[in-house]
Length: 235
Image (cartoon, rainbow, N blue to C red; front, side, top):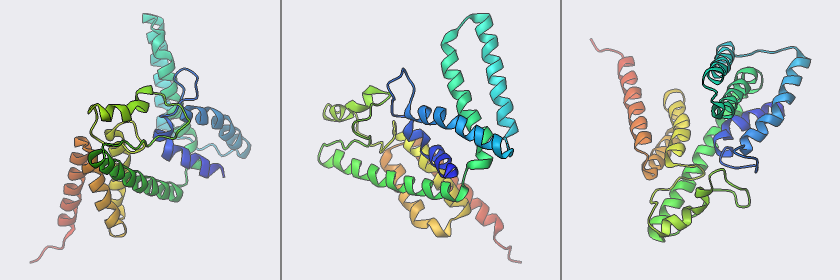
C-alpha cells in the first residue's frame, strides 16, 4: 500500500500542486508530502533498510547551507519558505524513491494520465473553438493556488485565452508531463505504444506548446538517427 501511495503521489504531484489547502501557499501536494514523510521514515527505520539517493541528499544539504549563508549575509528571509519547500521535494524523492517507487505501477499511471489528459485537452480545444465554451479541467469545490485559473472561462469569452491546458496550469505544463511518457515510449517501448505516441503528438500540436512540439520533433529525429545507425551495413 505504501508503494502505491508513494508512486501515485510522485506521478500526480504536478496536478495536485495546483490545489490549495487554505494555508498561505501550501498546496494539496505539499500536505500529502508533509503527512506521509514521517510515515515512510518510521517505516524504513523499523525495517532498517534505508536506501537513500546520496547525490540528491547531498544537493539538498548544500542548498540548505547556501540558504543559511544568504540569510546571514543579506538577511533575506523571503527565500526561506520557497527554498525549504524545494528541499522537502528533493528529500522526499532522495530518501524514499528506491524503497517505495513501483516502476511498473508508475509507468501505468503515467500512461493512463497522459492519455486521459490528452483526450480532455482535445475536448477542450473542440469546445473552445466551435462552441466558445471553456470546460474546466479543475476539480470543483477545491480551491486553487492561483485564483486566476478559476477565471479561465470568463477570459475565453473576452478572447484572452485560445489554448486548452487540460488538467494543468499552462499548456507548457501539459506538454512537459506527457513528454515523459512520449520519450519513454519512443525509446524503450516503441512497438507497443505506436498509437499512444501518435495520440500524444496530436495533443502536443493541439496544445500549441511550441517547446513541447519542438522537443517531440527533436526526440523523433534522435530516435530515427539511432535506428539508422543500428541498421546492418550492406557490403
